[in-house]
Image 1 (cartoon, rainbow, N blue to C red):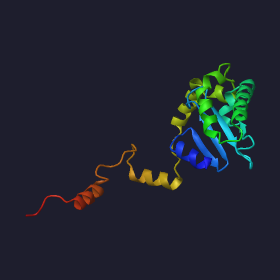
Image 2 (tube, rainbow, N blue to C red):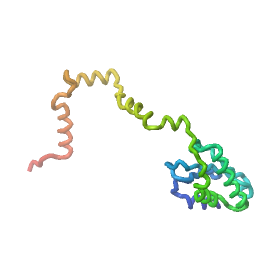
Image 3 (cartoon, rainbow, N blue to C red):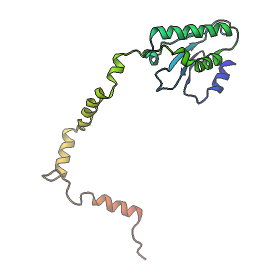
Image 4 (tube, rainbow, N blue to C red):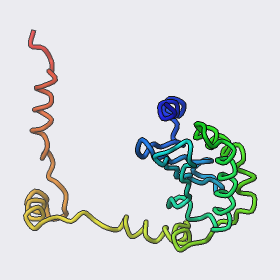
Length: 177
Protein backbone atom coordinates (compact mmCIF):
# COMPACT_ATOMS: atom_id res chain seq x y z
CA UNK A 1 0.00 0.00 0.00
CA UNK A 2 2.82 2.38 0.83
CA UNK A 3 4.41 1.60 -2.53
CA UNK A 4 1.26 2.71 -4.37
CA UNK A 5 1.11 5.87 -2.29
CA UNK A 6 4.76 6.70 -3.07
CA UNK A 7 4.17 6.09 -6.79
CA UNK A 8 1.18 8.43 -6.84
CA UNK A 9 2.84 11.14 -4.72
CA UNK A 10 6.12 11.22 -6.65
CA UNK A 11 4.73 10.51 -10.13
CA UNK A 12 6.62 12.71 -12.57
CA UNK A 13 9.04 13.93 -9.88
CA UNK A 14 12.63 13.47 -11.10
CA UNK A 15 13.88 13.40 -7.49
CA UNK A 16 12.26 10.00 -6.87
CA UNK A 17 13.27 6.82 -8.67
CA UNK A 18 11.87 3.35 -8.05
CA UNK A 19 14.67 0.83 -8.66
CA UNK A 20 12.50 -2.17 -7.74
CA UNK A 21 9.31 -2.62 -5.66
CA UNK A 22 11.48 -2.66 -2.50
CA UNK A 23 14.35 -0.33 -3.51
CA UNK A 24 14.24 3.42 -4.11
CA UNK A 25 16.46 6.42 -4.73
CA UNK A 26 15.50 9.89 -3.59
CA UNK A 27 17.53 13.00 -4.46
CA UNK A 28 17.48 15.73 -1.85
CA UNK A 29 18.22 19.08 -3.52
CA UNK A 30 18.72 20.19 -7.12
CA UNK A 31 21.17 18.53 -9.49
CA UNK A 32 23.35 21.66 -9.65
CA UNK A 33 23.31 22.13 -5.87
CA UNK A 34 26.63 21.16 -4.24
CA UNK A 35 24.73 20.23 -1.09
CA UNK A 36 22.42 17.76 -2.86
CA UNK A 37 22.61 14.05 -2.08
CA UNK A 38 20.88 10.81 -3.04
CA UNK A 39 19.37 8.43 -0.51
CA UNK A 40 19.35 4.75 -1.49
CA UNK A 41 16.61 3.04 0.51
CA UNK A 42 15.77 -0.67 0.51
CA UNK A 43 12.95 -2.36 2.37
CA UNK A 44 13.71 -5.61 4.20
CA UNK A 45 11.11 -8.39 4.13
CA UNK A 46 9.71 -7.37 7.54
CA UNK A 47 9.37 -3.65 6.78
CA UNK A 48 7.87 -1.47 8.47
CA UNK A 49 8.42 -3.43 11.71
CA UNK A 50 12.17 -3.33 10.94
CA UNK A 51 14.09 -0.31 9.75
CA UNK A 52 14.73 0.20 6.03
CA UNK A 53 18.32 0.02 4.84
CA UNK A 54 19.57 3.51 3.97
CA UNK A 55 22.89 4.19 2.28
CA UNK A 56 24.66 7.07 0.56
CA UNK A 57 26.92 5.02 -1.71
CA UNK A 58 25.58 6.40 -5.01
CA UNK A 59 28.17 7.87 -7.39
CA UNK A 60 26.33 11.20 -7.09
CA UNK A 61 27.41 11.31 -3.41
CA UNK A 62 31.16 10.93 -4.08
CA UNK A 63 31.74 14.63 -3.45
CA UNK A 64 30.36 14.36 0.10
CA UNK A 65 32.87 13.65 2.86
CA UNK A 66 32.59 10.48 4.95
CA UNK A 67 31.89 12.52 8.11
CA UNK A 68 28.96 14.30 6.49
CA UNK A 69 27.56 11.01 5.18
CA UNK A 70 27.79 9.52 8.67
CA UNK A 71 25.99 12.55 10.14
CA UNK A 72 23.17 12.26 7.57
CA UNK A 73 22.77 8.52 8.22
CA UNK A 74 22.70 8.97 12.01
CA UNK A 75 20.05 11.71 11.80
CA UNK A 76 17.95 9.60 9.41
CA UNK A 77 18.25 6.58 11.72
CA UNK A 78 16.87 8.74 14.56
CA UNK A 79 13.85 9.51 12.36
CA UNK A 80 13.47 5.83 11.50
CA UNK A 81 13.40 4.91 15.21
CA UNK A 82 10.63 7.47 15.82
CA UNK A 83 8.50 6.10 12.96
CA UNK A 84 9.26 2.39 13.39
CA UNK A 85 6.17 0.21 12.92
CA UNK A 86 4.43 2.55 10.47
CA UNK A 87 4.86 3.55 6.83
CA UNK A 88 7.71 6.04 6.95
CA UNK A 89 9.21 6.55 3.49
CA UNK A 90 7.29 9.74 2.67
CA UNK A 91 8.04 11.09 6.15
CA UNK A 92 11.76 10.34 5.79
CA UNK A 93 12.02 11.89 2.32
CA UNK A 94 10.18 15.04 3.33
CA UNK A 95 12.17 15.33 6.58
CA UNK A 96 15.42 15.06 4.59
CA UNK A 97 14.23 17.77 2.17
CA UNK A 98 13.21 20.11 4.99
CA UNK A 99 16.45 19.57 6.94
CA UNK A 100 18.88 19.52 4.02
CA UNK A 101 20.67 22.68 5.17
CA UNK A 102 21.11 21.36 8.71
CA UNK A 103 22.33 17.99 7.44
CA UNK A 104 24.84 19.57 5.08
CA UNK A 105 25.95 22.54 7.21
CA UNK A 106 29.48 21.15 7.73
CA UNK A 107 29.74 19.94 4.14
CA UNK A 108 32.98 20.66 2.34
CA UNK A 109 33.04 19.28 -1.21
CA UNK A 110 35.58 16.50 -1.60
CA UNK A 111 37.95 17.33 -4.46
CA UNK A 112 38.55 14.33 -6.68
CA UNK A 113 40.34 13.76 -9.97
CA UNK A 114 36.97 13.67 -11.70
CA UNK A 115 36.08 17.20 -10.63
CA UNK A 116 39.56 18.52 -11.43
CA UNK A 117 39.45 17.30 -15.03
CA UNK A 118 36.00 18.73 -15.61
CA UNK A 119 36.93 22.42 -15.28
CA UNK A 120 36.76 24.58 -18.43
CA UNK A 121 40.50 24.96 -18.93
CA UNK A 122 41.02 21.20 -19.15
CA UNK A 123 38.11 20.61 -21.56
CA UNK A 124 38.87 23.50 -23.94
CA UNK A 125 41.89 21.84 -25.65
CA UNK A 126 40.04 18.54 -26.04
CA UNK A 127 37.07 20.34 -27.62
CA UNK A 128 39.48 21.98 -30.10
CA UNK A 129 40.94 18.57 -30.94
CA UNK A 130 37.46 17.19 -31.58
CA UNK A 131 36.70 20.03 -34.02
CA UNK A 132 39.91 19.35 -35.97
CA UNK A 133 39.00 15.70 -36.56
CA UNK A 134 37.66 15.25 -40.08
CA UNK A 135 35.31 12.63 -41.39
CA UNK A 136 37.19 9.54 -42.52
CA UNK A 137 36.43 8.49 -46.09
CA UNK A 138 37.23 5.19 -47.74
CA UNK A 139 39.41 5.06 -50.86
CA UNK A 140 36.36 4.45 -53.04
CA UNK A 141 34.57 7.47 -51.57
CA UNK A 142 37.63 9.64 -52.17
CA UNK A 143 37.89 8.44 -55.80
CA UNK A 144 34.23 9.27 -56.44
CA UNK A 145 34.71 12.73 -54.91
CA UNK A 146 37.75 13.39 -57.12
CA UNK A 147 35.94 12.18 -60.25
CA UNK A 148 33.00 14.51 -59.60
CA UNK A 149 35.06 17.64 -58.93
CA UNK A 150 37.36 19.75 -61.09
CA UNK A 151 41.05 20.36 -60.34
CA UNK A 152 40.14 22.93 -57.64
CA UNK A 153 37.91 20.53 -55.73
CA UNK A 154 34.70 22.29 -56.78
CA UNK A 155 31.69 20.61 -58.27
CA UNK A 156 30.96 21.57 -61.90
CA UNK A 157 28.16 24.00 -62.58
CA UNK A 158 24.82 22.24 -62.94
CA UNK A 159 25.85 18.98 -61.29
CA UNK A 160 22.61 18.85 -59.29
CA UNK A 161 20.24 20.18 -61.95
CA UNK A 162 18.69 16.79 -62.41
CA UNK A 163 17.66 16.84 -58.76
CA UNK A 164 16.18 20.32 -59.15
CA UNK A 165 14.22 19.28 -62.26
CA UNK A 166 13.01 16.11 -60.53
CA UNK A 167 11.82 18.18 -57.53
CA UNK A 168 10.01 20.66 -59.77
CA UNK A 169 8.27 17.87 -61.63
CA UNK A 170 7.05 16.41 -58.33
CA UNK A 171 5.79 19.70 -56.88
CA UNK A 172 4.28 20.80 -60.15
CA UNK A 173 5.38 23.69 -62.19
CA UNK A 174 3.42 26.03 -64.39
CA UNK A 175 0.09 24.67 -65.65
CA UNK A 176 -0.19 24.07 -69.41
CA UNK A 177 -3.70 25.62 -69.77
